[in-house]
Image 1 (cartoon, rainbow, N blue to C red):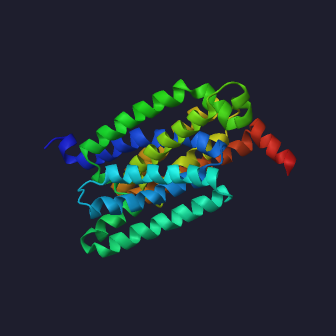
Image 2: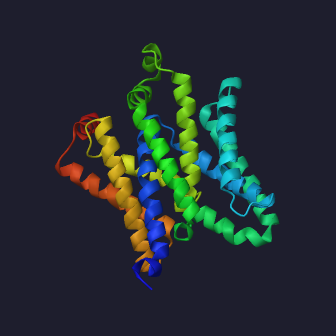
Amino acid sequence: MNFFEDNIYLIRAMSAALLLAPLCSLLGVFVTARRMAFFSDTIAHAALAGVAIGFLVGFNEPTFPMVMFSLLVAVAMFWLKDNTALLTDSIMAILLSGSVALGVIIMSAMKGFRGQLHAYLFGDIQAVSESELVLAAVLSLGVGAVVFGHLNSLTLLSAHEDLAHVSGAPVKLLNYLFVGILTLTVSASIRLLGVLLVTALIVIPPAAARNLSCSLRQQIVGSILCGLASGLGGVWAAYHLDLPAGPSIVLSAISVFLITLAISRFRPTPTAVAMRRKT
């Protein structure tokens, strides 16, 4: 037995973290800039119902129904926003609670799948398969190409949607494109952190990078690095300390955030200076 055979689960988990943690962190910069953290949380919780439906109809690996149901919820959010007088946060709360209730009811009726429910709630990165790694690699390359190919338009859209529209950017198309890739990324990352924790990897690394960055582009680079450190550090700690991987990654991300926050106190950025002046 060589090193790779002895540590196959660790290598797969590290590979998944290497692919998905920076991807979540990259999208998280735009999510936090556009105040869409609750949106990603809604999509993550909707995936639980997709998993339950997948098991119900006979899927051994419910990735496809999970993604499809998450996309359906994303479309429903846009439709309700355009066709009702409800506020966006109310729409998200309705869809989030309804999706979780549906998923739990279906899972509770299928007693043989309750153990898998726990894995999808809190993540099970050490059980990631080779096919899931291939999917993560394809997703990372595809989403990365889309984001960096439309970086200027997405940056302008995040800063001021009306200005992006006046500048000739295809705002509606970009909105749907961003929601689509965010939904795919959240769904794919549930194996990494679980339904309850996946939003943390989208929100915390950009927040950590913001402590030290002076521009959106700096925040993008910093967020990717913080996400990478959080993912790999959390998996390493979980493997060697026999801890659950999802919570370990989140606590690792919070540790990175606290470190950057402490550094910003000694080397304040323009953002930090502005915040101090407001207070």
